[in-house]
Amino acid sequence: MPLVAIVGAGPAGLMAAERLVAVDGLEVAIFDAMPSPGRKFLMAGKGGMNITHAEPLADFIGRYGSRQAVIEPLLKRFGPQQLREWIHGLGIETFVGTSGRVFPTEMKAAPLLRAWLHRLRQHGAHLHVRHRWLGWADDGALRFATPDGEKIVAADATILALGGGSWAKLGSDGAWVALLAARGIPVAPLKAANCGFDVAWSSHFSERFAGQPVKPVVASVAGRRLQGEFNITAGGIEGGLIYALSAPLRDALEKTGHATLHLDLAPGKTLERLTADLARPRGRDSLANHLRRRAGIEGVKAALLRELLPFSASTATDQLAAAIKHLPLPVTAARPLDEAISTAGGIAFEALDENLMLRDLPGVFVAGEMLDWEAPTGGYLLTACFAIGRAAGEGTQAWLASADG
Ligand SMILES: Cc1cc2nc3c(=O)[nH]c(=O)nc-3n(C[C@H](O)[C@H](O)[C@H](O)COP(=O)(O)OP(=O)(O)OC[C@H]3O[C@@H](n4cnc5c(N)ncnc54)[C@H](O)[C@@H]3O)c2cc1C
Image (cartoon, rainbow, N blue to C red; front, side, top):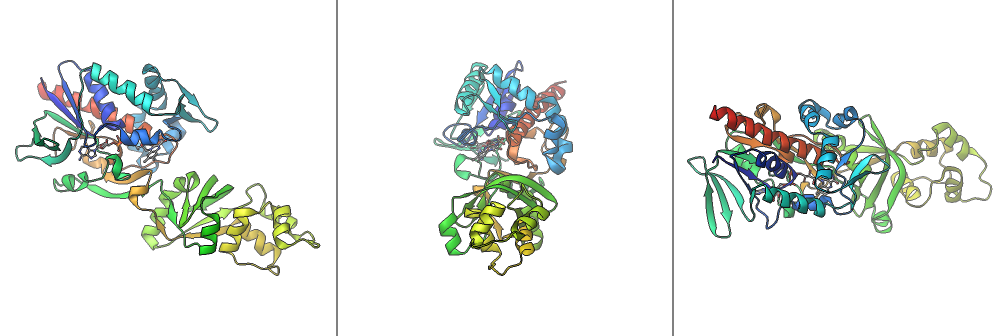
């Protein structure tokens, strides 16, 4: 019976397995370096597993930026709606949150993963944990480091679903980059995506405001403008709004060595309205009180204004209003890849054929975050990993069938 080896038991690898256990006459073995499968998937479930998004498919596909052309056909085969139906098939209900984000009813990943692994095993998949893939032996067989020493597995087809390079302690450490690059496979350098950034805060600001949320606020960079919230950290900024703008910030840092986020601290007021409000007589009010009463600027927002635009009572009203609406916040560096929610860079889609097989390594397929694409948080990461994993499973089946015939 032909053996398919799936290396990496995250959402992409398990979804490829799901597709292949349905095929008669195939043996499916899943290998993972960690003592248990799906560790990053479980981590994604902490604090609310946002598995997909309920917005219209065209908008959803737009989230993949320059990679939407390659991801679109995969999402059309298995997109957000099919993913929800698939989850329901595992006996787990989903709900749509107010922002359109979709969650399993219990908000957690563990019940879903448990039900899924149970079903995979029932359908005959063999899961081998503590099997770290080391590359290929001279005859093309797969080499694994195991607690019982090195093991060699001769597979008829292999699906690599080894993840990106963040949160290495959960298993995806990016060590595969060197193994594939040595085989001449083009791999774009792995970079942090959906990450925080360093800011050179004064020690007073950092000590006083680390951990505080800034909201509501509009942030813009490189023509992208988004409303939301973010958190101050001891050495910088992080949170949903920052993650959503992390790609242009990271790219600007890479290109020019500096990047600036512009903040609108009073998103509910136009510049004209704010200028007029601040121009009203202050009477005996302190400037801080005046800013609070007339512009709603207080607490961490007032501190940000002082930190980034040292001003005094004599600062002109229109200057103050302009700063509140367009406050430059220079960031100095992206946080390290290991801290990021996800990874940009990876194996170029151009290195794959329509079955997601590496053109230069026949019989080796690739899936999930180890491919060169990125997307914001909001369920887009997991949905694409599922869609690509499923397509890799189908591609493997098609290739094995054609090799047979
Ligand atoms: C804190 C956090 C929160 C997140 N929240 C969300 C969210 O709410 N929504 C969302 O859509 N996405 C979220 N993500 C992202 C999402 O979890 C990932 O995009 C997804 O898990 C990637 O799936 P994958 O199967 O490609 O890789 P992974 O899930 O990383 O799985 C790869 C597997 O390969 C194994 N492996 C790696 N190297 C080897 C080797 N040499 N030998 C054997 N096995 C190996 C690893 O142990 C791992 O099990 C979050 C990520 C993090 C870190």
